[in-house]
Image 1 (spheres, helix red, strand yellow):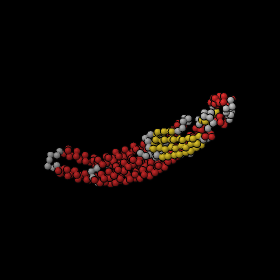
Image 2 (cartoon, one colour; image 1 turned 30 degrees about the vertical axis):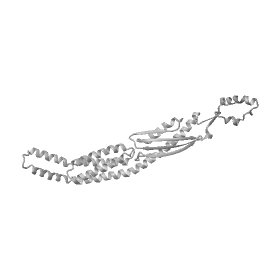
Image 3 (cartoon, rainbow, N blue to C red; image 1 turned 90 degrees about the vertical axis):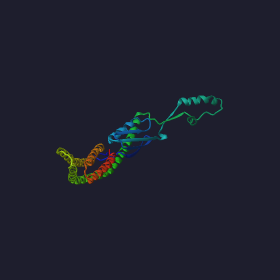
Image 4 (spheres, one colour; image 1 turned 120 degrees about the vertical axis):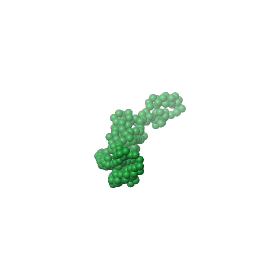
Length: 298
């Protein structure tokens, strides 16, 4: 099964696969949770040393972030186990009973009775044939890959759900930026009125013209939020591009969220009217919600 393409992916999910080969049956479960990097943990039966590597390679081929846990439980049918007769133990039993057989105290032992004695029969679950072991490991590794494909599909399902949420939040940010632009247009006049009142208050004091110019320049700079609004608009466009492109964009979205918040904070600090401040606070709230959801994106 091949799953490819630039699809947005989450980091939580579950996949399961089962298999059987050479008298063995097994089940593989793969699950993942959020993580800043890719970390793969494997648990499985002893004697199959190549499976941990197979699990890690399967994860690396599909994921870039997240804590992935792979568990494999295997069982061998009793009838399929390798059976051996411990000849030395059998001879010890025969030697110990020989005097009693020779004197007629007991009847000669039967084979079924001898085989039932403790330690005569040995059953081993370990595969001693290297080729058989390699074939079994290969079949188990295929099931690990199948479980990983199921996990990948689940993570992509989560990504599609996140895409709708994140797109809606970006749309809301764009609406608030547009509202901020509308309010910002009224800000210079409000600051001018405030400056005129300030000058009137200081009319009776010695107030150098240079100081007046400094005050006017400071207030004018405070009124200019065009740069912040342009950056926010650019961030909105970049976020939409990342979401549309899909793939492992979680880190870039996380960085972009920091840039969003930086501009929103500056916008609020420059605000001189209540309406613009209110929009700025709403903007910060939506950006924080966006940031929380981005933590789930691969």
